Length: 108
Image: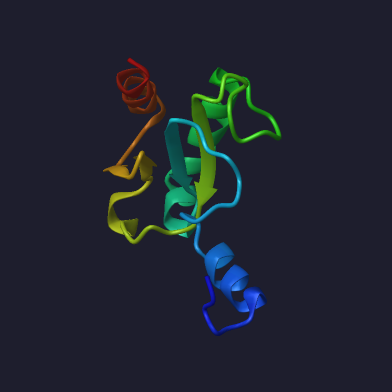
């Protein structure tokens, strides 16, 4: 399909946004905000715990292809940080204990 603009411009626009990706994603996509407010309120701990539980190091998707974990930067809910989204469903004020419950619910 012809867009009438250079492909490099299309690519730079698409790759600017965290929710667009060129990588294959799992059936369940968990995005953890690591914007400034979320980091101050513990989001990096959420990322570490989740990646550890799912046996992810450098990879972003589990070996079975079921779950992908990505870090995003500011989804606009800084007053309710830290935040995560699971398949675009927003969860606010998430702590490590709640994270486990949220993930278990989506893995059913």
